[in-house]
Length: 303
Image 1: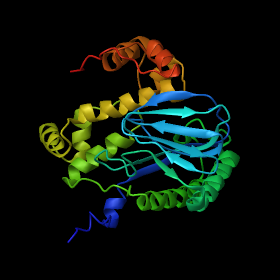
Image 2: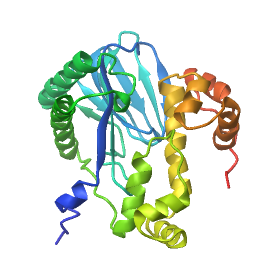
Image 3: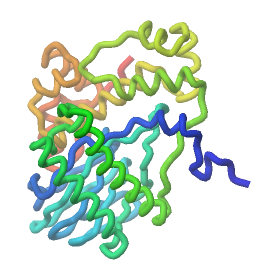
């Protein structure tokens, strides 16, 4: 008999550990027509409603194309996205991560949802986008940094969670159910949750993390490696690396602005850090990304 976790049934306190919010949402505001790019390990999940034209996502195993009125949900693994010359989309980017770093929604392959099966999803996304655009104006530039009062925050989440629940239902029907968190020491999960949510421009130390978890630094490091097969520092660095790729590749932020958003005191320090992890300076990497080709230089493994 399958366990409760395998059936997606968790204690409510486990669900409370899910870090979840909309990152940005826009409808036809960003020009995607004729664009293509490589993607892998994006810091946030994406779901696109094709308004006009087509969108095609290609992985090593298959290619999937969505047409007007259909949703396309790309995987987080290596893939290539291409929009035709007439394409326009409603795009929802969102953060939904368990304390252990697992994504709530993490399809192994691209999923296309047919128009007739996703009408409710489209209706809910349209309501979410209209509310966000009305209240937050530029809802395509990083929702987590917007300001809101209690009523606005709760109303935003009413729209967002309604849409996310519908997306999870449709994906489960397509054979891609939501994930559940790994079973681990509660103190380790508490530390991972904090690493997932601390602003990237705020400094932290292993001693502070250990204090928050209620462990010594040595104990936390040992238990963290046992649970996640990586250290807290490397776990956080992976999040920072994904954010850097997102800021430069998708949001096309200037190098100096990306450096500040990631907590670097200067562009020089950021460039050295970026080169070590991506095998190229930020501007060279960005040019390759915009041209739709991955940078092939071998990155050095940081200590």
